[in-house]
Length: 112
Length: 111
Image 1 (cartoon, rainbow over the protein chains, first blue to last red):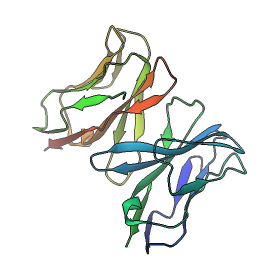
Image 2 (cartoon, each protein chain N blue to C red):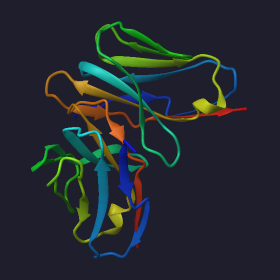
Image 3 (cartoon, rainbow over the protein chains, first blue to last red):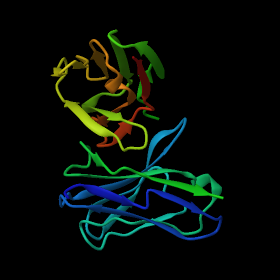
């Protein structure tokens, strides 16, 4: 099915572990984004990518790593998870840097 | 710091009532988008407005972009329980090609 798919939907991990959140889109959109959504902060941009092999930092990149070897995939890795990274993570894609974005259903990550 | 303020933060009304939510900034926007987010899902794009003074309608939803392109409003006529959700606005800043997000208005429509 066409769309943008995130996996897993839910994840519980321990402090210090490495975690990778997956994002796959089928539209061949150039731009892909990772956001985190927290109460009181709204959506905050972690990393974005303008094309395969081109990535850049957003507002809150510390503790995260991304890669984009193929246009359709944009995984987000937490190198050593901390409790402050407990959040809901959304992947989005777009033909343009400034929207309209198509979002995935999100990954709810809990770090214990 | 560029901010996009949404008001009210929370609104709970009865089915059939009308409501308006606002998105305001001191920055000028090239365009402004409205999204609706339902619990457990990602935001879904409702509309993009690009011209000062522009009005767009989507069934019972009316979106307006301010003449100076610094603010926008969303008016819902005869609200229904299916309108329940978090409404987010996001503006493309005119001067530096950034997308700024508001914190959202949480809307609950009671049957």
